[in-house]
Image 1 (cartoon, each protein chain N blue to C red):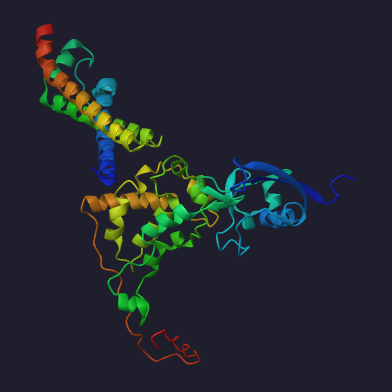
Image 2 (tube, chains in turn blue, cyan):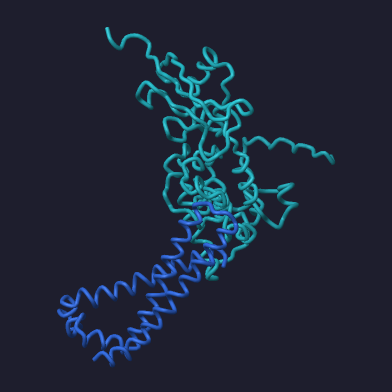
Length: 125
Length: 278
């Protein structure tokens, strides 16, 4: 991927994080304020609320999107820091491959966790 | 009575003689300073009275040519444009610009900067070479179009921005604020049609993507140019182009033939210089 494309995705991921993290903050920490507008439901950290969100397709998609955006944004920034240490060509490639593998691995694991959560919640409940 | 005698200042100079010195060394010389005296004047005095072999690069003495960029009291500045009095204190520390090699003493090796500058084609790229070689009239440009690049055209290529840039200090692949600012200067020029050709280089590792927006380049520029802004504008233009949202426009055409009654009292232009072909 050329630097221009990678940087554009970095900015796009930042925007996604801004929106989805804002949503997360509103739901988890501003429930009383949202209550004033008649939006909030039960206490967000109650078991029932957690299970309800885990079973919702909207929240599952949101979690996976936020995970992907945060991983890409953070690892791209880490890559820039590492490349500024001026590694040689081999080490440079290793940084690129290593961080891509790490990001993909964490994304797959996180996505699996988000998708498996409803089933796990049912067993736990 | 204190303060009535001539003021004396110590010039602390970093010297380096290639082939002789393995490491740079520091030398101190005390010289008398007078009001209005620049660091460049001080260097001439040191050379005349104490260190005849001291080397630096300078030419115009008026902040135009960009030759005398140096690290003065820890900040990249033009020696001809910096008065000793404005620095305060009794010691003026002078070294060659950092982030470059050193040719000798205070002379930085600016070769790599100018190579990168040249690679980014800092000139009008158009498809009318005949008009460019032998212009018939000027290209049409509105004052608004001029404003888009005017401040970037004040760059004198002194290298102060490159010396102040933290990314240039650590990343040899980064083109740096001067070449990037100048590429943006031409990309923003309505007479230019070279965006796509410059894009090939700018979209890759040599482009603006490693800029942290520290802004030091703009802070130290002795001509008040804002290369950090140029780099952010360049990022925007390149991303907008990637998203295929960039409006394509042909380079500005040659201006129309002047019409109306010629004004009286204006001297005719001098005859054109004959070319080698006659």
